[in-house]
Image (cartoon, rainbow, N blue to C red; front, side, top):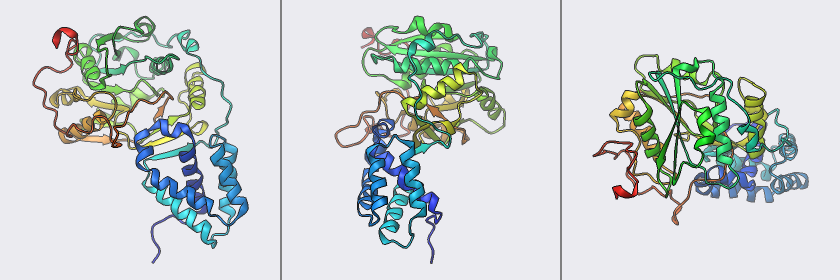
Length: 398
């Protein structure tokens, strides 16, 4: 009896090429080190099957792609050749089987837009620092929507600051009335390192002193508690997300429906390469496009990540105690928050594109391969003191 594996040769051929890129491109591992390690054995099965191909042309094309996984021409050439290959060949069939198992089970995939062209020039930070928002911050104190962006950048090249400014500039070009949503950046560091750069782009800048490990949960809670005012809806937004022009309007409309407590705006996150990040920011910010087209970029798809962009009702956020402030560093805090939102309310999941700008890797794994916060039980946050205390990690409070 036939199974449920796809039989379309283009689907299977693309799976082969994509998995080989996931295996060979260093940007793949940087996009999500946890998933890269977790599914490594499936990916290696595809490599081994490719090495056993009895067709010398196919062997050559798979080897060429593995040697230069960033080259879209090699990816497309391999897909064409595999589509035309003899489906009765045992070694080709074995490669398709291995590739589909890897593509089916792996939460890390490859995206090559149909109109992607290599060669975008780098995007210097100074270009963004010299760019003013289309609509200057002007939100009223009682604005019904609050966008909170937790932030830290200690990288010498300023990549994260560049991404934050691109994110803020995209929020400064929205179809939703600018006076009705407040944008707040919470910088958590040993000092207000980038305050003067950030302030012209936001309604409020908040400094949350913490000189050691970054704590996203506490930074978000502090932003909500100290700047939330009368907000009815809260957007917790990653500083590396490039939004489209209808981003705020579309998600506010979703919260106007009864019986909804919050939602994720996306199912999959597209982590763009450095080159594609530069292209997408230029299209959206400098050229004024309503959105950066996913078909013009290349990157790595993280399937069902839980926290790059969440919208929640303020009432539900406070009812569940906000985010779990025990999480230090990166890893697990977003999943826990999404779980608790799902228990406490009707928590939806939409399928909007989510373009994530390239930056140095953040997550760190323990020696056993688990995330650094794996010891914290899910759904166990029960704060005994007010959340978001701005002095929680100050030396005098220890």
